[in-house]
Length: 117
Image 1: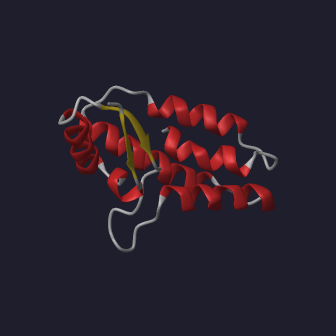
Image 2: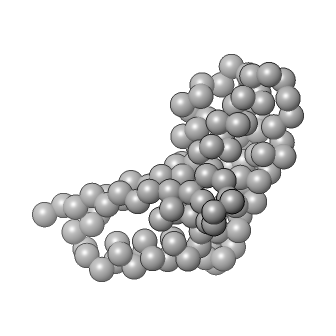
């Protein structure tokens, strides 16, 4: 039997949560498909990555600098990568993202970057 496992934003919030997901997946070999949400809140006053990406899109639309928000998102994924001891080039992904960000970028495509990363 093939099982699909779906993990929401709070399950993707930080490196500790990623480790829990890893253990859940490894505990059952039939869990071969994993669907994840973008990183959620780590604590009560934190921001969900999806909400931050919507804010980036609004800044783009109105011609306001979005760099501070995008850097917050990038820092979040760099922190997760570093705490997990991974070598994935998050910075390269964000460099690519920055190059194609325009006021005309599709909201859906932009917001999907949270799950992609």
